[in-house]
Length: 608
Image (tube, rainbow, N blue to C red):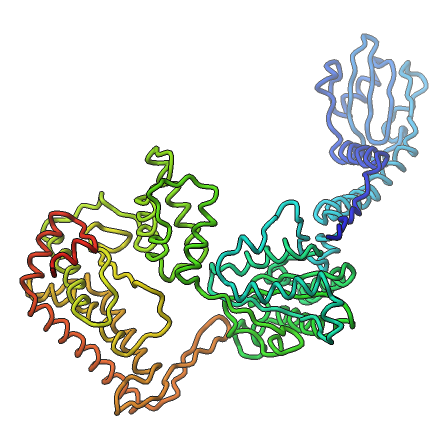
């Protein structure tokens, strides 16, 4: 990897200039404020001008010295006096020119001192201000690159392989994504092999994936494998309050990368500057649009043979400008999905390498309980388990620590200190068992993993449905069965206590959301609605969002009616199931009140 020496443009401070400035400051202060030193001169007595003239007329003074407006005198006993006269008053005006008097009157020349005083007071502040601005620019600029005269310099950081040694072997899962980036790494290492076949190096690779799936980790792995200069920068670092600064930084970044080609530029969170132009989103920011235009120009204007690849990461590809995504700029789009069962196990194994695990730990079982978890969340699971082991003063991480960590991340911290009355606890128990039974007696609902009346996070109780395998499609019946299980808690309250509580508010919100998605997005609203998508479009302007409907009010009424029919149908099905199995509802709820938690095995035992 090429070493790029940082430019040190910072010059040493001239000691002569420092001494000069200190002298100017001292002189300026002394001349401006003119400190009174009479405190240290105890024998000097300040008197009025009339008193001094009176002493002169009585021959009590030995000498008088006049310096500008200041008049000092000394008598024959050594006492000193000081007073002031008018600036233009002469000795004759003061009647101090009597030759018969013993007092010696002396006028001191102050023309030279006055000249230097005028120079220092006139030019000194200007010199001080100039030096102060120079000093501030040197300090803030850090060598002139990021100061007031260095706004346009790139803030990209150069990758140091000695500090970051991430390899592709340390990136678990995302096998297809790794295959695509391996080709890019090989192209940078052996360009002639591809050029002989007429293949051109891709100009841009867009890493797309949900937050926490490992986009930045994959970029670090590319940097560790490529052994070429790797410049990393965030999209937000291009944007400043001054228009044109971002475009200047883009030019400087690409200029540096071309100078050190072959090289890689990694722009994290590119959606900060790559949003669609003219759509109203972002308020039409001139600085952002100029920065985007400069990136488009630089990516499409590479010189032939300039081996510079741009990597960019985003979790919002839908907001990016179309000109940024066309071939010739970002030629490849690498999708990084949520890890599946095998990938999750590999990720857990990687994060467990520097941790002490007990013999009973089964990471495959943990992987099966973390469906839908991203790589960052899996890392958090291992970290939370390690913290719990340390708090419990254990020498290794147990399976229980890992399972508790999964529950903590999924449902929140257990709040055993929350005081709940016996009546409320009974309502919570029947509510959670109602969820579990309604879901268990449907065909497509996920299996019940755990039922608990221990408060977690903002929830008073939890019924945890956990899928047994990764799924990528949801059927109409499965969505309907999920609505039935959500209705179970509210129906159990109504059956046992004759009324419902506010505990079902979140359930109703989720039910309504599923039903509206089925009708408006997935074409599951029946014959009256038909297989038509009625999604609303959101438009933003000046930080505000507006929703536009592309259907009539008559259609909106039909949609509302279809949603209501689905919700009521699921409610009746949940009520039917719970009435049919009322004895089980009573028995499991009573056991839950005693145990506080029922596991999957204990729940399934009721149906044997």
